[in-house]
Image (cartoon, rainbow, N blue to C red; front, side, top):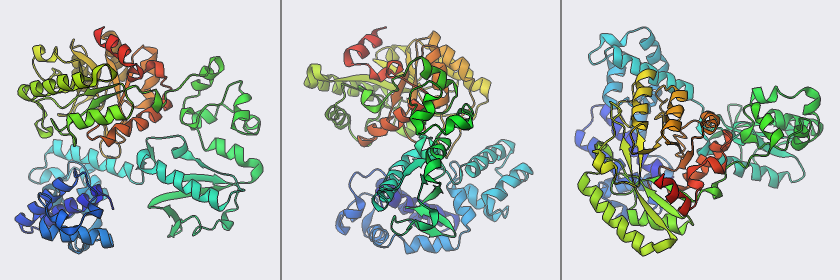
Length: 539
């Protein structure tokens, strides 16, 4: 059990206790423990009890519960409240924006005990009869409930791909002479996947599930908690079935049955007169026309020369500016762009002017130490305010090396308002990058609606780069809009939005999903060398 999972148990315990009107001091202590543990750098599972107890907000009693969790995977105190709380109510607590107070009211006053019932009540306009639930709140809850139900049974690619690779290796070790490949969503590198899909020429009944460590529960297969789907086919149909399960339906429709039987995947592509197209790029049939003319060099993680959009302890990051910069330098990159939150983001420790000046002084000192081999650039993730203005006065904004403009508040907007708000920010002369354009959080929150053609056209007109935020929960801008960006000459910045040293490696998820949209290294901002990046800043 990792730190995040352990911390999450205390968050859930605090919420369940609040539902049941327990001692507010105990509730606060568990909530504080969650806040302390979720950002802790050391491995909680390996810490001795006295070290755990010395963590701020923990103490002996909570240290005992951590030890209990590590040893058994359970916590009796949590189990007690889970047993007396309907499972649907516990699901509601996981819906972003529905806190214990609202959930308690839904449960106790409305007698609703599942997300499905909640959605039905919203559709029947029943929530508005209760105090604190006007039409606007009801509509917001309806949207959250719909999104939750739509997302059930899906997983982030970042959470599943390594487990999928591990399962594939298990199969290969147990069946070295058989054909076995990943297929489906994981092979196509979809941001959201429904499980691990494998195709093999092993007869299904002859697969030793225990040998490859697959669990069987209620006739469903699981590996390390993820659903597993195994498709068995004959050896002579293997390539045909693999290809069918490794592309979109519209891409597949470009091939007739005879072409699909032309040997391995490379052979199938030869029937169209094109070179091999990687599975993640088999989405739009137009890709076939591109590969007839040339073989585009799709971006790869090793093409990235600099790490753009990062946070430090100056705002809500886990590591100091010095630690972040040194880690990026040691990882072999040429430059590092620090983009802490702006002052309006009080929830994230946004930087006042005083903190800004202190950070700039530290950057200047560090740059002197690094000399010509590495460069730290002064940036900010400036909040796009509700009227489209940027945070800070223009005289402050103009002193940054570059400004990333992002929306973090007032997310409930219709398309016209959201589009106008972003375009105003794009047109600000200091804006160089538009950050995570839709504000979406995969499997948790849909983005606000935008007229993307207008947004991209505005970026083209104002020489603004669009971010592909590589955080696995964002992957925003959506890869489907990358071709339009490229057609308009708009560069994409693949940025980790790193809040810790290790999260700079989110870059790999950004480049993976960028390949789905056909992004080339040439059209990515941070594939530029340090000297090229400095030249771009001067334009």
